[in-house]
Amino acid sequence: MAENEHIVIESGEAAQPFNYAVGMYGSRFFKELRENKKIMGVKCPTCGKVYVPPRGVCGPCFQEMKEFVEVGPGGVIGTYTILRFAFIDPETGHQKPVPYGYGFIKLDGADTLFQHYIDLVDEKKVRIGARVEPVWANERKGTIKDIQYFRVVE
Amino acid sequence: MAKRAAIVGTGQTFHKSHRPDVNGQELINEAVSRALLDANLTMKDIDAIIIGNMDHFEGINYVDCWSVDGSGGTMKPVMKITTGGTTGCTIAIGGYHLVASGMFDKVLIVGWEKNSESDTSGAITTAFDPIWDRLVFAGAISGLAAEAQAYIARYGATDRDGARVSVRDRKHALNNPHAQLRKEVSLEEVLASPMLADPIHLLDVCPRTDGACAVIMASEDSAEKITKTPDWIWGTGNRHPYAYLGDADYGRLTSMERTAKEIFKKAGIKEPRKEINVIELYQPYSFAGIIWIEDMGIVPPGKGAEYIWSGATDMGGELPINPSGGVISCNPIGATGLIRCAEAAMQVMGKAEGRQVPDVNHAVSTGFGGCWWTDMILHGKKKPNY
Ligand SMILES: [Zn+2]
Image (cartoon, chains in turn green, blue):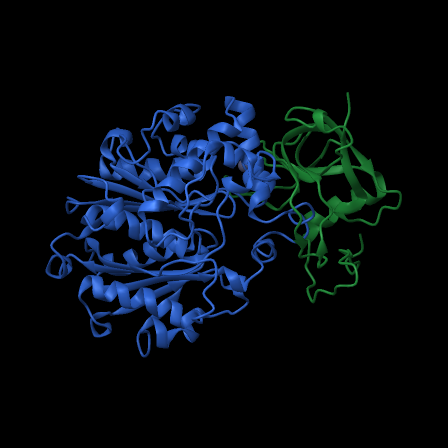
């Protein structure tokens, strides 16, 4: 991803006066997501833990991390909830559509949990330990929404 | 010159869902005036002030500056500390550091919040990473629900177990004229209340509150001259475990475990369940009342619910928890942690009136922050021997 390329986080018609840098680790993640449908983590050379999202430093070891590793794209539900109460999404200024599945996904090969939507088409199958896979967006822009959501697979 | 330090006075507002009759500094003044009265001191006696809240809640920053008329801070050293949900506990720890350093003899600590003036979920969202943490985020409740689900899957607890904790705290609140929600609820009412985020029902979670709390700490040079029953600070600690929400070990509060171990070791407490007489737990939802007492080392992992059902944590039980009614009954967020500290101090000082636990030697108060960090204070009747 070119250095001056911008990720657009859509807030509908609401404008937010912030310009955040995702850094080199975040850029690599979004580039691989958009161009190759790959989810990248980063591995600590000291403790061996694989972090998603990737970041420069393993906090507990206070050790710089440089080794990118591909994780997922499948995984299991590490924990989750089903959001049922309506609230205003501060990112858009509009009511969030509820209910929705809020997943903490343990991607294959990762040691941390990756947050994303879980499809509720069969709510009974949404449980800790259930296998999931990502459903990709038709048009990938290099944002977290390049994955539309995760769905439970048998 | 390190000094021992003690709480010598506390004050609180009568917390309500909405206080349109006062602005922020007037609300703060109510708590400060009551704390000074309780300690029989005046503002002239106060050497420094630590104040805090979650200032992004009301969208009015720098309470350290604009509140001086109400806080008494005019032409005194005033510092703000804000650490999210733990703020009220962290300001107490910060005040303790000032007094224990020997540089300030008497420090006034003030926590406050007017949640009625804010969009709490919207403001909480600003504490989390805009790229990685906000897509699915739903305020404080989503992480708490994920914790409860993980704990349930690991240890087989039920939403009935959680409800039992709500029933306890709401019953205890009847004894506390300062609590916001003073109406008993039944197990059935908790379970029948709307499901907000599985497995959390409306009556499993804290309300939004307007309120303020003030605590005065003094060094050992003056504490016993101010009151015959100072509440000595035996230890304080805090821990921050993670960067992103997905990094946490859901189902265990590691920050609580580490903080508690550090403090109990320092104080020589080997069996916390027997040596601590009362806990004011920063418990924003019911399941935390089961999970976090395990992390604190009161009971082993997986045994929290059984302990709660035994009645041991009710008033009159082995180790009453939240005699004040706790956070489920009252939650002016920037004050909430300091209310835990003040209520623990009142228990040690014998000033807790209708909610007094008999013969309190040691009390614990905690703070919890957004999500998964912990502050903790060990209080004691005797002056620590270190
Ligand atoms: Zn490491």
